Length: 373
Ligand code: ATP
Ligand code: MG
Image 1: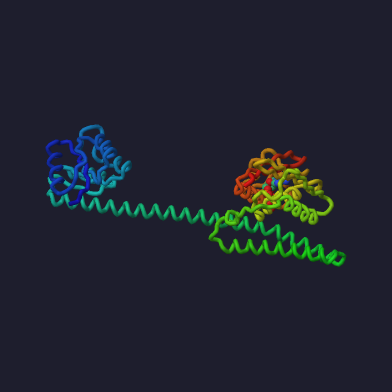
Image 2 (image 1 turned 120 degrees about the horizontal axis):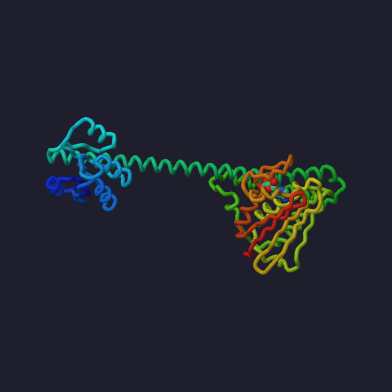
């Protein structure tokens, strides 16, 4: 028994009943018997059959071929035509409407069954192929997104190479130039800084080689209680040593910043502050003050980086956190437009937010708000 459901469209009631009972004898189920193309469309939508047996010449405004085309478009059901006239024109129209079979009246039960079964299996094959094609399309899109994520990841990772590299270079230069005048303790300290920076690069390299983890920053998120005042002091010192006297880097913080109760991911906090500080320095080519300010409240901490640099034109402000977006006033100052993307991701991972205020030619303030975890 086939159990397949068939809609019979035939405007001669006696013929329709006859076909329906023959079909039932063959084991098919009848969803409906209708006499016009319009009714056929409605019936196919409300009670979708597996196949439509359609008379071509019908009463009403539309003929069987038009109805079949509409049915195939909306509910994707195969149609087998029945007709008493075998004229070439009709045959041609039926063919071009993508029909699944064609029977000339009168027909034998055998022919009817064979035509229906062939139409059903052809439709099944076509559906399977379409599904496979759709799946292939989805997989291709997924692969494309993956590869985009990977190249974005590589850009971000290589961006983060720059900070430790700059540190290594700066410390090595300082050692070479002034090392002989330094105490052995200071020499030791600068060597340690070089080692720390090298270790950071090593870590990044490991990340890149495990590309399966598509999101560098996410895979690294590990918040622990941090003495973030000391952490910031250290960062400010390092940057100050690298930029020399044209800049005055300052750190201020409120006494109520309870040093050890705030959980932060130190590596990520480093990415965040290094990017904000190096922007503040880079976009203040005349030098000046770069201030890092910490404020603490009961449930949140605020980190503010303020400079007196070139500022950001109002029309560029909304885009600065987008990848590869640089303001129109950067001139020859180098950059790729990725630093703030990293900053924003870090802030989001901590469940915080970031705001920027800027006045062109006067200066810029980035304020990061982080919840106390
Ligand atoms: P890099 O990838 O090397 O960091 P970048 O500094 O250009 O390049 P972002 O740090 O993402 O990229 O900053 C995006 C843009 O925002 C900058 O190109 C610059 O136009 C603007 N910008 C960011 N910080 C400041 C700042 N402190 N003062 C002025 N403009 C800034
Ligand atoms: Mg930058």
